[in-house]
Length: 478
Length: 95
Image 1 (spheres, rainbow over the protein chains, first blue to last red):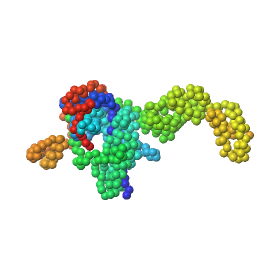
Image 2: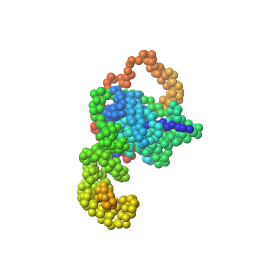
Image 3: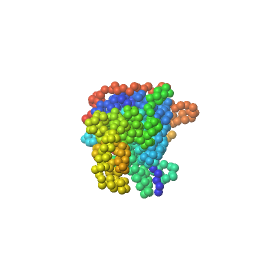
Image 4: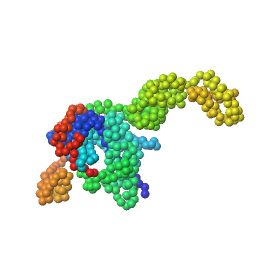
């Protein structure tokens, strides 16, 4: 039987505000337990939530970036449930009238295909605290520092058809929120996480299958694995005549399985209602225009500009615009080398990214800054060093050398471009290898490479390859 | 609208209220009366009326994004039944 997979994601992006969404307590990560949980966050009697202007601006910014309508009037609602890390017994969220309406983003898959994924809505809400289940004499420890941290929950349409599409979408949103500087995107710290709604149906069927929701996926790899596992599990069930139960599941990355989180069949009944503590949120056209004016160049626009202005391939542009910092690094290198856009792209995408990945670094923690890399590329471009020697210089820069010129000078790596000097070496090599010369002249032209190798060896790779080729050809056919 | 015994049990459970079995019928009839009172409004034509989210005809005032809360953990935890290492302790939650 042919199955079709249907996936929708709910992404929680923690907004990069200084203070909480409804209180003036700090949102800084890693503070001592409960040292940043004030009376409002604890839900003590008599407190009132007051909405953070910056959280509103950030949500609106996101809405504008995905071409969505930012609601002129939206409502906060109480989502009621009991859990110890939710002190008030309800989470302040938005239900019927979210701040951001429908929009969309374009994703690109590895094979180059592109697809539009719909965003149903995005709404503001507060995060809950953290439960620590380690043993406290049979009790659970509660840290409420995270309670009240502003979240933007971004809900997609069920538009994705495989785990890879889901990952591409999640990466797209991740890149977007970081471009917009509304979320630091730190997945280890839980600033960016998602729940995946997964179902399968027989291909061609209109009606959606029963879905399960996999909670709290905090890495791109886990999203892909968890979805694939869940799809397999659901297909197994259906092919064996069983049915899928609508439930919440948890992905265990160590055991590599998903398992049911709540055994209770009772569907959650959150009894949403408008929060009487909060008045409707109004966003005026004036404010919206103000926010629109602060929008940076977004990834898609930047990518198109890189292809256009720098004559890069789509793939190169895609890689270089993956983050705002990387794109800025690239443009800085291009500017200070006075052009050479393609050469700069090759060195960054190929060599630099390789070195960064190998050590688990990213562009912001790179061991070669844009100025140092420019100094290297300038010397390749003006033929001071060959591409091969350049790799040696790159390694020296990576290990802490200040700039390419000093490395070239100290190690004597300057390319030999003097025709007469190269000619002298070529002549030496030719006369020192009479047997090979004989063979070459009698038709064994493959030996040309041997002669090139000998010249390069004699010059420690410093001779200009094009000149070596030309001069050797002349000498061998003389 | 007439609430059934099962409705009362469900609502009580969701609100974590302990109710006596013999009181269920009274709750059912009282709550049904309230719902019926409100249901009278269904007869009013509200097609052109924007639903109200709050009785005050005002909009939400916003706060600037500044941290001005200080750490008052000690004061808050002095009224908590159980604390340890800065954490509030609660009966074990098992998922």
